Every structure is written in C-alpha cells, then in structure tokens.
Length: 395
Length: 218
Image 1 (cartoon, rainbow over the protein chains, first blue to last red):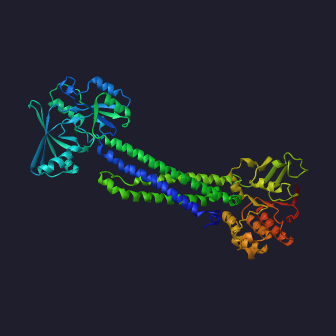
Image 2 (image 1 turned 90 degrees about the vertical axis):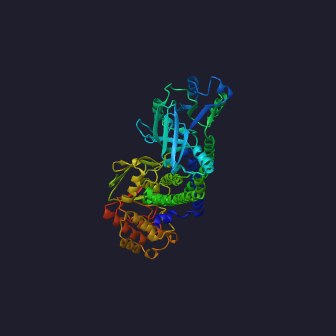
Image 3 (image 1 turned 90 degrees about the horizontal axis):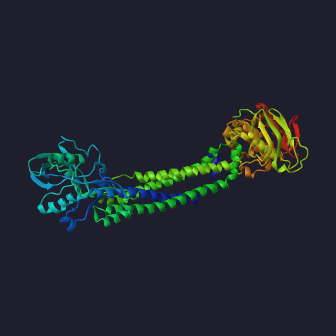
C-alpha cells in the first residue's frame, strides 16, 4: 500500500463499509430481481400474441332474439363504426372480413386423412405485428400463411384426438404439417386448391386469420361479388386497456369483448406488483447510497488535515482522491456483483416454474444490466462527491 | 503555465484582519515589494505581525488579503488549483511553521513522500543531509515521537526535495542550536545556490544564519 493510501485510509470504518455493501446488495438485488422477474413473467401474456399488437380489443354485438330475427343484425353500420372511432381511448379501428366462399382443409397424417370445413377471417395488416415477409400473400403464391386460435389446437388435442384415438400434436408439429385447402365458390362453379401454412397461434384472437391481401384476392375470385358487407366484429387498438371508459361504453352500447381479457388484467397486476417491489428496492438502494456518501464524507472529514497537508506538498487532487475513489469503486462493484449473482440464483429458483407455464424464454441479462447500471450510477455520484470534498480541503 | 518565477511582487498587500487597524510602518505591508530569484531575504517580525500569513499568501494556501500578488507578469488570483499544485512541485518550496509532518510516518517516509512526488533528490544525498543534521539515527522513528528540534530538521530536508525558484521558510530554526542552525543554513543555501533560487526566511528572534541577507521588517 502506498504511503498516501496508508495515511488517508486511517480511520476507515470497515463496519460502515460492510453496512453499505450489505444494504446496497439488498437494494440492488430487489430492484434487479424485480426487473428480471418482470421481464421473464411478462412473456406469459405477451409472447403468445407476438404477431398481433398488444393493446387491442375485439368487440362484437351481443346476439339477442331481436337482432337475430329482426332486420338490424349483428353487423356494425358505418355510423356505429364512426362513433367508436371518435372515442378518446381508440387509436385505430379495423373490421373483420369473412370469406365469401367455403373452405375445406385436409391434413394427410401418416396415411390417414383428416378433413374439415373451415372459415377464414382477416383484419387490416397494421394490426398484425408479424414480419412483412411472413405475413404476406401475392396473387400466384401457392402457400397461404395462417394464424389459428390456440383454443382450436387444445380442442383437437384434449377433446377430439383423445376420444377419436388420434395422436396429439404439438404447435411445432402442427406448423410443419402441410395443410391442403380447397376453396369453393358458393355455387360450386369455381374451385382453387392451395397450401396453408400455420405461422402462429393466438390465445387472444378467436379466429382463423389470413393476410388481408389473400382475403381480397380470394373474395374477388371466388366470392359472389356483392361488395363489402358490414363487419360483425371489430378490432380496436386502444390507448390504455385498463380504462374504465371502455367498459362503460361497451355496456351502454350492448357490446361485448371477445378473447382472453384476463391477460391484460394480470399483466396490469404484474406491473403494479413490480412497481411496488422496485419502489422498495429503490428506497433501500437510495439509503445505502447515502450510507456510502456519509461514511466517505465522515472519513474524509476525519482525515481533512492530512488531505490538506498532502495538497500543500503539491499532490494532485486526483492522486489524493484516489484512495477514497478506490474504496467507493471496490465496495460498490462488490455489492453490484453480489446483487447480479443473487439475481442469477433467484432466477434459477423460479425459472423452472415459469418455463412450465410457457414463459421465461429470455436470459438473465435484464437483471444483471440493471444491477450494473445502478452500480455505475452510485459510483459516479460518490466519486464526484469525493472529488468535491478533496477540492474543498485545498485551501 | 508558469515555467520559472523570476520575481515575486507584493503590491499594496495587506492581510484583511489589519485593514481596519492602525499598523506601524512596514517593509512588506501596503508597499511595493519585490523578491528576486537568487537573493536572500530575512523577514523579521514580532509574533502576530503576519509573517506566516505572508508565506501562506505566496504559497497559495490563503488569499485573505487586500492588494495584489504577482509572479512576474501573472496575478496569482488567476491561478487555478492545478497550476498551484504544479508550482508547489516545481517552483515553490515551503517549510510551514507548524511543519505539517505526518506524525505516524517515520522521518524517512515523510521525506520520501515528497521526494517520491518530484524524484528530485538522490537517496544518498538525503542520507547525507540526515547525517549532517545529526538525525540519521532517527530516520526510521515515527516523527510524532521526535523532539520539535528534530522534527524541524526533518521538515527542512523534506522542503528541499523538489526543484524550486523560491524557498519559503517560516521560522525554520526556532528550535535549533547555533551549530545546527549553521549546518541547516549551509544545506539550504547550498541547494538554493545550485538552483539559482531565492530564499525567504522569517524569524521572531532566532534567524537562519545567511550571508548578507536583505532584512525586511514587518
């Protein structure tokens, strides 16, 4: 140890430094652990629908005796759509378009054929987040990309396949199975044969979705050509999914939302809980920051005469500050690395359960980066405070 | 950046505490005074006359004065901390009255602290000075356990461990006997001559023995 360090580290209280390391470790571990858990758990509600923008609602009119037999129907008129578009919580509105022809899909599964009648729907492409390359159809393409509801696969696997003695299939297998589609116009005069490829599953869009471009083309080729009928379901991009105004509007207009709503309320809850955890961690980290600030300040105050004498000898400010800077950097880095290690441990404890729920495909980077970034901030502020204190003892 | 200081000029300088007081005629305060490189100065004063203040002003550790202090053409009020620190390593040597030694370090460590910063004096030369001043047997003693006279000799050696244009000595030999005063003076003036530097020494009664110094009364 150099003579300067020997002089200036006198009166260093190991207990105070240890107190800082401990409290800083706890604070950082809580913050970065919270961030890490949020990042891991978030995918439970978002990754399913990664190809559809997150904050949307699908709404339709309630089916009642009057609109079933009356002349109003369940379609939305232009004025109703315009009214919805005027609501403050609406960013964008799109209608669902249905096929104007019949669809038969068949799968050749190990020699045994399976075929079913189907339907397609499409929504405007700006509601779909998938890459333009994957979610596209041009006239002449032989393959149509399809997104199906997760529920359909579950219905097949757990309802139909087990009772009919057919093998269960996973999402991956399903995606690799070629789907043969036979599209027939209503009068049976026109037929198209195509390949379908499942590019994704949605737990929130309760439909079988094809690209808008395909829908336009196929309806023009196979449809009756009686123009656009009014859509019976609307997809709405909303600015804040938890807004009470949305609920009130839907109730007063006899509308209902389709798809899984629990996702958004659960993710809202996750946000609240994470916020509380981050708040607690933040307070502890802030307190530990002040512990370090005060103990360095106290230490330098005790050694003020020596600081002054060294500066009188002509030592530079930074060489006199360096023993204290080293204490700050070492203690903070130690706490930061401990916290990062703690996050890794914590994650390995819960990641098994999360993976079982279908989330946690990410890595430990968010937690580690948070711990290190906060450590850097603590170091920068304390080094700044040390340098200012040295400057103060110059005269 | 100041390379060499040829002249230190005090122009109408007066410690602020004296501003409202009636002070006796002085060779230093409220006059125009120039210290030149290569010259010897002895500043004599009664206790409380402000000689330590004068040293502190020139060394930049205090600035509570009226008037101007110039290093050649540079007004020192324009100097930043970095420049002062550089001057303290390269141009101005200073032995404060309170010595400012580190009591927990040994005599040699105190000296090496400064010499390690400047790398100015060879180790053999330091040993020789310790020997001449009669404290070589105390070189590895903590300074805090030495007598004031011994500490003064350690302080003198430490103040010489750097290049300088001026050396400021605030009552450097107040606790030394005549013999050690003469030896210390030989070493200090020898170093000053070698570098062509000026010596400014203060005293309240036991002055550093120098040949033909300019005597100034505070």
